[in-house]
Image 1 (cartoon, rainbow, N blue to C red):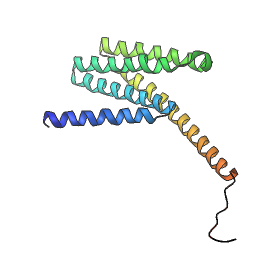
Image 2 (image 1 turned 90 degrees about the vertical axis):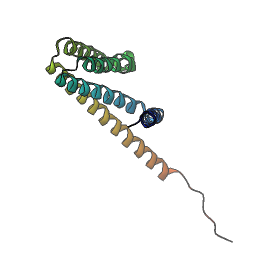
Image 3 (image 1 turned 180 degrees about the vertical axis):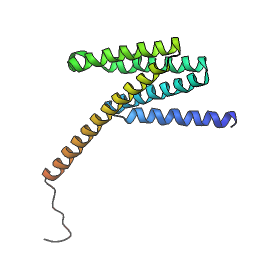
Amino acid sequence: MNAAVGRAVDTYTRLEIETGVAAASPQRLIVMLYEGAIKAVLTAQAALARGDLAERGSAISKAISIIDEGLRPALDLEAGGEIAANLMALYEYLVHRLLYANLKGHEPSLDEALRLLSELKGAWEALERQIHAAQASETAQAATQTPRAALSYGKA
């Protein structure tokens, strides 16, 4: 692939992501962060298998950045109470596992991080589905309760 095509693909991908982010609900944004962290851990696993230390380190750093700069700041410890505090502790644990995986080339730590991130993503996707279903139900209920103007096709 030539450089111009590569730049075009990169631009398309960036715009697609930016458009998705702009139109996303808060729950979808969290799911997108989990997807990015999962992709980074999968990349780190592949790099570890190949013995590519530079790519492994870069991928693990990306996963840690997503957790530290995206997922943690999204927590509202006051409103979220115990659940938010538990998530904060889990994010801290994930970062430690990822750092250990990078330092020691420890595949089980990457496996554990991937499993935890996938479970959390699944929980947020379930929440997103519940909210969407509730909103759809409210919209349908409102539509049936809203009086409609009578249509007229001529003289009455």
